[in-house]
Image (tube, rainbow, N blue to C red; front, top):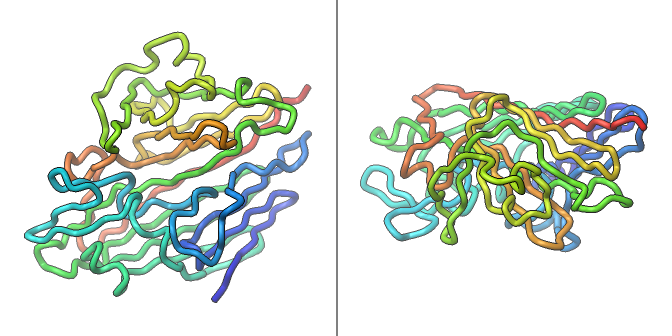
Length: 306
């Protein structure tokens, strides 16, 4: 089984692990005037041979991001007359993907439904993820197709997926987290509750501390940002002069911020919908039989010349 695929363009490099959930495990981008910079954090305990949550890199959250609930039962949902188990962040990260296209700077991975997915998600589907490396930019294009329900009553397929990049923070050895901040055009926020649901929406920012967006602030942990004026946001490291810009297509409506104190990463995650989207419908899409839905996002590194 293919263990890794390496993309290169100039001095930029990306590593994909098809058999490990199609994980983008490593991304090093090279901006003019700077050295190549590793952007994605991966824990020392990571094993390519396992199939659980990777805890680093950039796993894809399909078909549903976050936790789903059926009544007070976490990680369950109801569809028709049946109740199904849905793991946290779906199941795509736990299954092998097929390499269906490759060039030096580009790779296409494909996940198809099968016996391992039917008990969790009663649909025939195809997900194609194309990663393209160009200079200091990585583009991810996604095509999600409902190939038909396993049950006539379940013909429309629900989708509220996301991506979960773990960014190194800070972005330089001589910088600090206190010198890193988030730039965003978001105008609303929703906190994640202790049980993993979305809380009540409020304006963003509500305070000078939130407006600074400093990543040391506990206000930027377990926070969901929405109502973006433009589909992009940036992680800025003033200490190193580096900026990682995220850009996303309209299907991604939210940015989920998550971190663990002292771990050296900050997650800035484009999601289609809020947690438990299958229940409340916020950001949820229902794909008709045969319908293909597209999403895209970009990660780009910039370096401020000094």
